[in-house]
Length: 300
Image 1: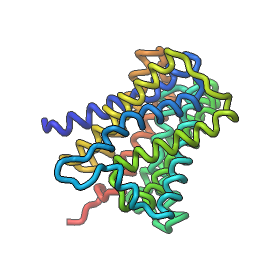
Image 2 (image 1 turned 120 degrees about the vertical axis):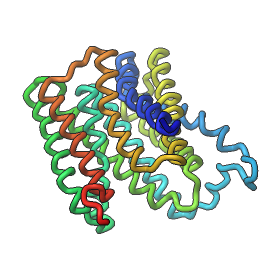
Image 3 (image 1 turned 45 degrees about the horizontal axis):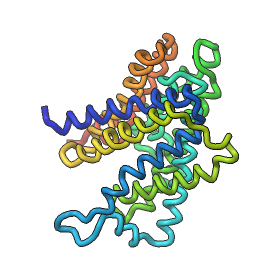
Image 4 (image 1 turned 180 degrees about the vertical axis):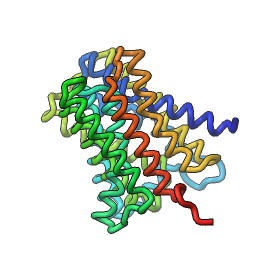
């Protein structure tokens, strides 16, 4: 097997325990805003020394590229950070109200909202081949909601918060598209983490204040090191050898991994309806990605 595919598999395994670790931190007494804040602070602290070191053959340290950003790019980056902060707050709060599998499956619908927002804001139409997948994913999301409304597991409020998290993440990616034009990915990521941490710290007094225990902090450190350093960075490394398509499809394994982790860690066994809803949602996203990338009806 190509070693790069192993990096992708490692990345999926690491990001898939993001939801369970957030739930652990919440159970140990932290609140969502504090978990989000410390995740951003620790992630930025990990990246900062790397970004300040000048690489061989390069005239400047990566962080210096931030100077090239225009005023509009800075404005877009702050907006992107605000959306990221809202994503973390809504999604992490959802984990207190619904099952981990439902929450992660719903928040993974963000590509659909990216397409919807692109259609409204940028007038970019969704490819025809992708529409069936979008419809199937929506049906799956409705089944998850029906599971909660019927009182089988979770709560409809948690499901709606997870969907809100997907919408805010879609806004985050669209703003990134405008902001990151003359800046390398990693220094810009450091900027986003830092700005998001600042925004979350400003929100602390209105959202219960800073609430963090020692055990919860260990879980958050796991989020920063595992999900950020050993998760998302693995995808960045793998993209040098595998296509973005492979990474996009691999990320759809996150809800499955989250379900397995939750079964082991919390004994969360999904109901039949929830399992069907989550499976239909993931299948819809697979069809959507295939349609978006022209893989359903390739022209020869």
